[in-house]
Length: 165
Image (cartoon, rainbow, N blue to C red; front, side, top):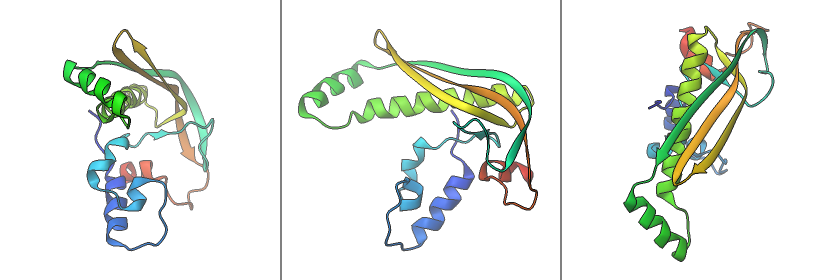
């Protein structure tokens, strides 16, 4: 399973120790508990973006499409709990956790494929998910690329800063 970024953990620790009157929308900026960071994914220095470019970088070489697939099944206890919860109402946290885990694995697979091709970025990244007869399927896909900074004086992108050291 893909691990949490040390950058996010460092930022979380900083924000947890500071007192702020505003409440940003992202959990690490709100000072959320470290257990809430299951929704952030370590990409081992690979920039991932849903945009067609990376601000401050230029695409040097396109390495082609990359795909990461995973299929998960629910256990009977989770299925029973979801039926009961749907009657009562509220978030189906077991299913949410399952989807986060599947998403993280799919990202991990496209990151590994990108690195295997010598890339350091995935541009135009997208997700698709679906139900396959009681199974949850998640696909992450995008374009693997090699990018480089346009202006070396600009602060490094957080995902690449870890690999530059």
